[in-house]
Amino acid sequence: MLGRARLLSVVATILAGALGVISSTQTWVVVTLADGAAHTVDVAGAAAIPVLAPLSLATLALGAALSIVGLLLRWVFGVLTLVIAVALGILTSLAAFATPVAAYAASVTSTTGITGTDAVAALVSSATTTPWPYVTLVAWVVLLAAGIMTLATATRWGGTGRRYRTDAGAAGAASRPRDAVDSWDDLSRGSDPTA
Image 1 (cartoon, rainbow, N blue to C red):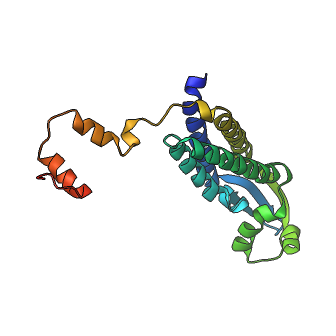
Image 2 (image 1 turned 90 degrees about the vertical axis):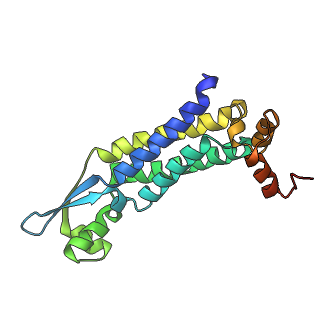
Image 3 (image 1 turned 180 degrees about the vertical axis):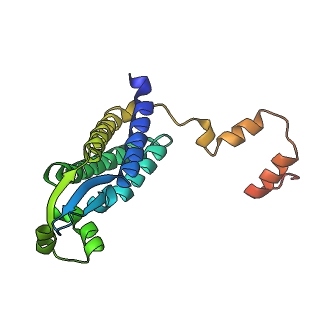
């Protein structure tokens, strides 16, 4: 299990972030207006929670970077993952279970031109939540688990390998015959290959 901890943490973080980005474009709430014609307004996830798309993109970046960082940044990224998971979990829970007027007020205002929380609440006859907030809430639970796993196993992950180290090229060059490219590299480093 510990051998796969890095892979599981990275994949879970990236998948949660991707689902958050997708969810931000989907309809979360369908609002029916009490205007006589019972018009409906579809409220996207990004309108219900304005920070959903930016924090989901940040989660994607954290997941991608988590695959190559060292120990200190693993700890930092693990804590950031937990903070994002808790913040988005709370906001998504409010949108899913309570459906406050603030979640759909901007969409109703842009459709009708009526502003103010009380005026919007008086105009809305019902607000129905779609499955998307609940699916997204599951993604934040997975993200929370990924953050906990990152913090719990960060010290046991292997190194990133020679390909990300700056001294790897010099060690590889010493084991083979020198060519013109090596001479140019020496010049780039400031040493004279003819000396």
